[in-house]
Amino acid sequence: MSKEYMTAMEMIKCSCSTAQAPIPIMCPISHGVISCKTHLPVLNANDHIPFVNIMTFGTCNMIQTPAGPGPCVPTVIMAWKSCDMNYFVGGAPALTKDSFLTCTFGGTIKFE
Image: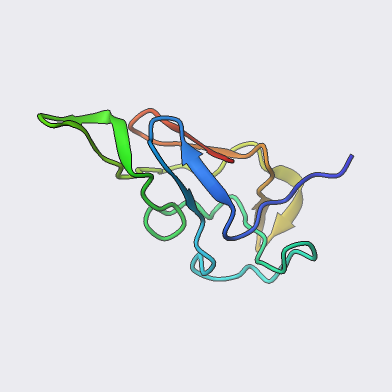
């Protein structure tokens, strides 16, 4: 069974947010591997930098303001987990559909 590798512009969503967002196409650089299927750069475990690779997801249910849920400020300090440890892209494991991140506010970021 082949794995589905994730590329730039894939949609991701945090479990504590109201919206999904794509991983930008320039994140910030290509790792030198382009998907034959999408013709976009394949992502690796190090593509987890807030506001470079991981954009805001609208509002966050874990951040409360007097007016209700506050703005999403993705705070990710660890690399993606559940990557393909047998396929390295740019020196780090490739991301698959099962890869995920944990935000320090408590949410889990996954591919849609």
